Length: 275
Image (tube, rainbow, N blue to C red; front, side):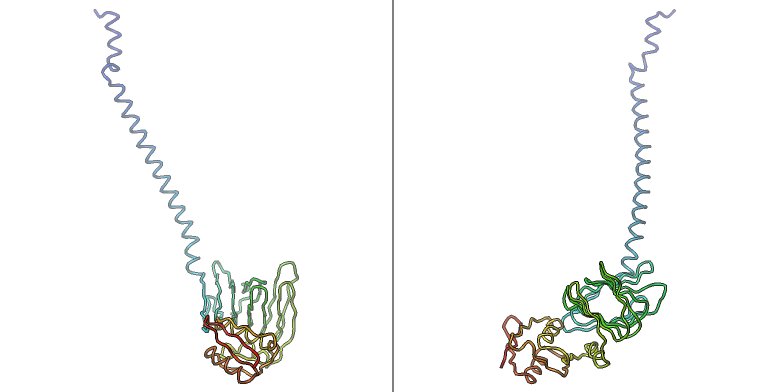
């Protein structure tokens, strides 16, 4: 017959033999493996969701947006995704965004001539540092002289200029709005003035109606070379036009037409002095 001590030893032998610890360790390993599989599945699902979100954002960004720019003395014409056309003057930079039905162009600098494809359900927006031009189908030109000055000229159709804290300004064909900081003014242009506005598209610069200071500003913007005009000659009016071949040729034509002399400096800039 077994004693009370023997019975107790019969119940304690698994602990003494380490069997329970072994079983517990195996169970703990299985639980850790199961939890690890769950975490891996959750991580994979999370990564898949993140990948889908990134692709949802990145693919349209890559396919339907672009940044386009021109160099000094370079002009470029292109057809946009919606069928609209834009002619870019020299040293012009713009961004396009046609994602999810948008028709947005951001003009950062330079001058661009737009022929917008008609789509009354989707307005075409041109965003500039001085305001946004809203159209549905029309032909117009935007010139950014600098971040504070701009000219918007309407050839065909209608446009609305939207600026912060002001009522939208609607332009009619042949009208031009000139913006200088917070101020703006509208005037009606003649047919010859309208032709002069877009003469750069044909490789010409028109001097008519401009002072020598304004001509120098436009040439500097187109060719990328600084031009300093002496105070004595800033208000001279050259008249006529010249081909946009190279800056020296254009300045030479001005030197022949006006009582000025052109001084070329070693740093690539020019000075226009009285003769």
